[in-house]
Length: 347
Image (cartoon, rainbow, N blue to C red):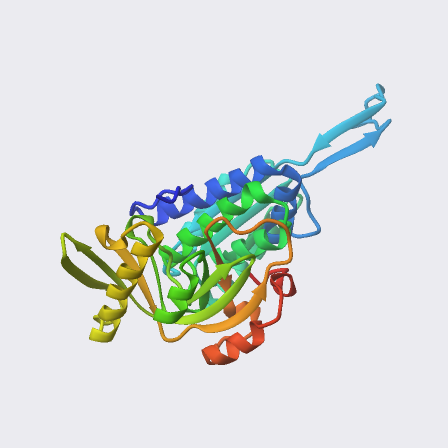
């Protein structure tokens, strides 16, 4: 069973916020320097930084005692308000201003699957401008609005190919966001899945199977990964749960329409083929990911180390388009390319 770093039970805004804070705390524990780069790039912006400053022989407030050096750090506070359906209320945001005291950096961060509505964004920022003018002499409060997708893209931009310890955690947070519809357009994501000895069977039957206990994140495409490369891509049509325990065949669609007879025959064929590998997948409930058609490609990972089990790719951003072309065109654009060709925010 896949180990999840982030809780999956349903309490929506509270659990979404706590999981995001857990992700950020894990990021900080892994590498404080990269965490502050993330904080500066995404939230505090380049003109402000809470990083340490090192000053030599500096007097403070006219104090006659001058030390050899001072190591100090700006204080900062980021007040976070999370919504799921853009239901931000101006009055609530205004009340949040009472959370600030004498910090050197003050930010209200609003987080939602989609950008804040323009009218409210403009109205609150206009209020904030007046508020900051009335409190002249005090540190102004900034408002930053981001999406869960913005946060994930920023983390992907900062981590390097050798940041193995944090990659699995980010991938699980990414999966969580897709599962909970915190990232819109999940149908534009490709899930690369490790396919070992079953690769040829997957290609022949145009399906991929996995133990139902492992779950899955929402996605629109399957990529078959083998030997440090995605060998084929297929558009996901439906997901069927099936088993053949004690020769009693059971199937139920959990995404998309009910399986056709042809698809049921292919599932049964996969069950039979599994026996030649020394096991029988029919003895346990499995998810069968039925694709339109697997198209062979060679989309290679040049950096060290293979993926552990799966990896998510944002095809819309990789191909720089809001409307994805046909699967054939996607395959053509990925074929004979490397993952590194699409780095810096393209995952």
